[in-house]
Length: 381
Image 1 (cartoon, rainbow, N blue to C red):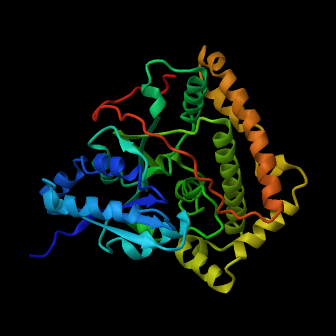
Image 2: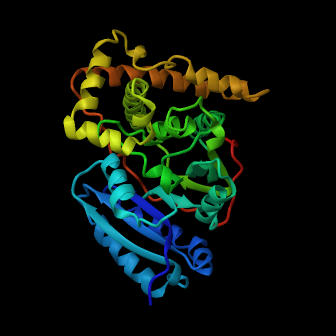
Image 3: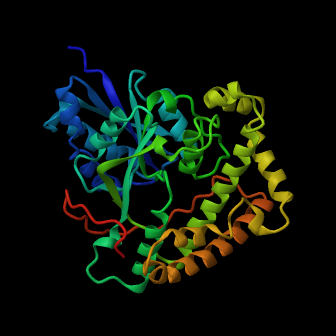
């Protein structure tokens, strides 16, 4: 009997995640998307993209997948496999998944991190349903919640972290690289250059909201699926926060440089970036790195890495209403100071020849998962 056609391809980004992966997979296989697709005569494939792993991520994933394919109640609607990608790098894993590993007939491409937990069992199906219901949307996303939101007794550090998330939530058309779903025909026109950095969501947003730089940005091309979202463990120590912000600044600088380059190309070259970027990398694998080096050398001061560095924290604060502006001011001030320090570090790092693949691995501890189906109210620090 022929297996049902794949409707949704789910790629799990995993880099040395043997400890966090079992909990994430348990959350994933509680999703209703498998039963719902099976009822439609369709299937969801799950592929663990273990890139550059030095631990047993592949073995852990393979063991869970074998068990699920044999005993999952909705196994008719799923298939799963782990792929060992020797070359480390999120962008390379993304390209391999979208262009080589995912089923050609798949209508939707979903990416997720290997250390998140879904709080609603309908999350993945709701992402698919949001795209099916809105033909103008190219990507669907849910809400992101820090696990500290569920703590009964929150510390000052917890409250500052949650207030920062609350301000980030004012951004129109925002979506997180931790979990999102793309239309397959859009995803396959995309390609992530090797030196893009670790901000694939920022690059994808810029391309998707402008329809490959053909129109002014339109946030409605990103659909916020109702009752969809996940929980993650945030960076809380000063060192981890600063390292993460440094990574973000490197990535946003790369996005700024690559978008400036794309605007010089004819519309035909921008319309299919998978073809354009592959051609560039075949011609010169370091083409983007060279442009980035030129950009950084031409910027005398660290706050000139990309536009808006000095003001984006305050613009987010200004979007808040009433007393929330006052209560969230300490978080905006702390975030502004961290941004300045991170930009200074990123500027020195890039001028010194540092690689855009910079991604420090943070320590992760065990934390209790909230009850499945709980739906935290956003913006409640």
